[in-house]
Length: 224
Image (cartoon, rainbow, N blue to C red; front, side, top):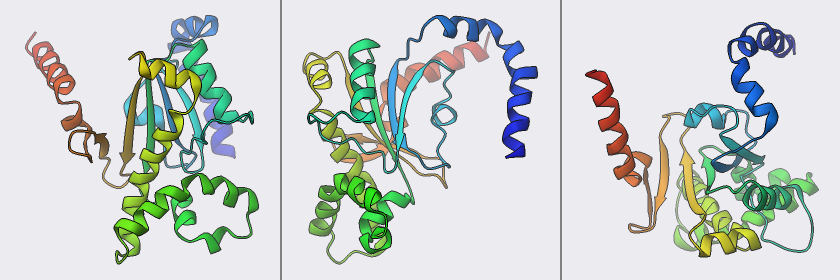
């Protein structure tokens, strides 16, 4: 805890004064470009992962980066999605899973979380993804199934979020774009789902046109 307290002290004495103008702007309003839904896992840092500044991401975190299908029950995830899309005008929604996810291990080995009733119920929202894995890879190893489950869970949650009314409306009219990502913690690689190939490919490949434009811009600046 001492490291966390020291961090707060350094933020107040060093970080905040150096970026006071940014924080003064953020104190008035927020205008994030993307809703980033990812796992609560302590190894994931969304802003570090995508190099964003404070105010650029609206973040939802929970065990397993899960999005319950829309229903009449008001939960934190549902309310946050509604606010992000309807009130903040979010244009992009990213659901990002990650390797060696403890929640996905719990889905694979339900006995390990049998004594955690709330966790068990929460992970039931990933059950369909597990069923897909068992259907497609019945003789696969645990690691092979885990890798596929991580991907299938992200795709399942992407389908779930489309049942939320505001998301459905904005997505149908092209005002919101949906992105499915998986982050490999050990390698630093982020793969994105590509609908054309029906597979996860490196983000550089999936967003090739954008990456090329950015590379040209960077290269141009280097010659200035």
